[in-house]
Length: 259
Image (cartoon, rainbow, N blue to C red; front, side, top):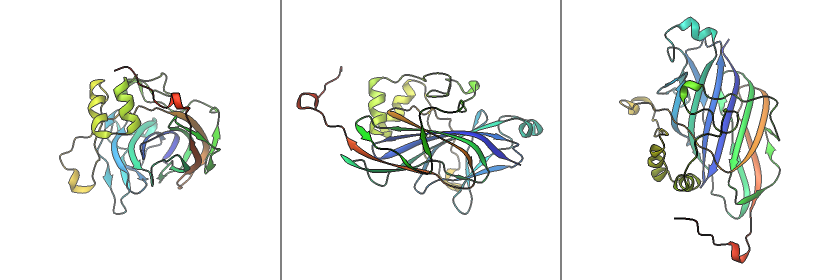
């Protein structure tokens, strides 16, 4: 039976959008596809199976179908016997942008068609706010009981923050500012400068003909909050938190950095 041994999801909130990276370690991959139900209005950036970037398919209910057979190895029996890494990178707009105070609802693990044994989550929120306790389907923790899965070394660059065996690639000031604003038109060309690939939204069905799948590395930034849960079966997960903007003194309101 196909199952997800462990998964590590990162969610970075910036400028009214959430950028997700979901890394799954799948065992007993006898199924041809992994069906994932993303939230409405999600935009897929990239999908990777094993060490190869792949083009996802869509079923009649607009679920994402990730191919599990024939990717990363020519030996089908070897794929069944060994763990297979699958990564899905996608973006979701928030229902409303963050103001000076309010409540933030963050969809986390999307619904998958197979059992998930162990889930790790890192949520990165803007540093300019104070946050209350989280409520919802996951419990916040200060540390994980074990190390989350990380990208295979053959992908290049390590796993980044946390659990990836390193701190990841450092971005310069312009790249960091573009990520904080989630300005995609500016952000993507800047990532090319430090050799970090990306992909645009992948439409479904025949509209994606001719598109070349691209592997994307997702940098993260902000204040990190960690969550962990055992055994997720055919359900979506969400957390909520109240926030309030940090008030600055008069002389600290304007800061000019180096050009």
